[in-house]
Length: 215
Image (spheres, helix red, strand yellow):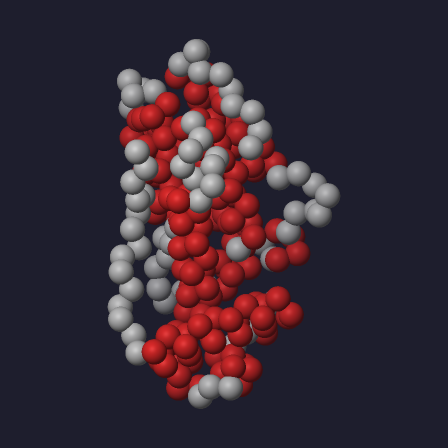
């Protein structure tokens, strides 16, 4: 059984024109990021590029960081949909050990791909947003319980594994975009380390559990 991990909640109802403006602004922001990076995305520049008034942009996002928070939230929702109902092994249909490894590898890829947006979404006047990280611990806990229902201290282990998965992002948030970007032909050491970590945890928790292969 696969239940929703962390529901984001039902979005507030909006007027049709407000929905269109939001979609237009987010689409325009993504185009600007793809062309020039996050540095060129400002409230004024976004309004001008989208052909909307600056007041519309300020009402929608509040601050420049709010633009990137909205982009990140939209992508986090899409990521969660893949976990909840996408194809295996990330989505339902694969064994829990395989899904656990697949989740970690996919989550690391997501965090690295969104490094620049995540940095730009930080607002010193506001707490650091939790975002999709909130779903990591309960999802890991669910899969651990499916692998071995008698696993000792599963909640504590889920907390530690979630920290191991989400924690490295903090290092990348302090780096500039060029330094954080992996080489095009290089493997992903964080993803490989995650797979090795899960393999070791599962073997030590239950010697009968074989190390899942690459996903």
